[in-house]
Image (cartoon, rainbow, N blue to C red; front, side, top):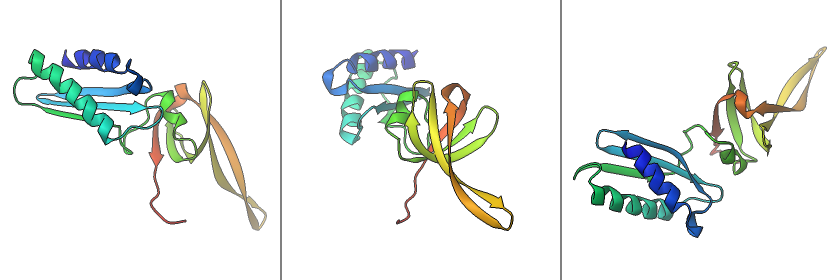
Length: 159
């Protein structure tokens, strides 16, 4: 399988100092199109993706894994893809996110902490007391094993 060969090459590449904090999110092949999603604990940019793409192309071409005509896309996961690994959460502390739990509970809030076994979201709730309402800030811990889907929510509005 080409995907396994690509993953092996990436793991070798990630042993290099420049890519030491990089990791594989997903490798998908559909006919002649190969998509490689990678991330890093610090920062990933176009230059990193281009270098990794060229590295992979060299091996794909040399070994003729996909024939002469193929499409190779190497990128970070993007804002619309769900987080898959606990290490992805750490660099998103302070950002708003939406989590769907395995019990189908949807929790939206700001990621304020990432622990070994769980994340902590903070959000506001309105509580009615008689005729008045007050706002309370609530923190909710959600275990990684209980997360079905987690997506970062970006806001482009001015504050």
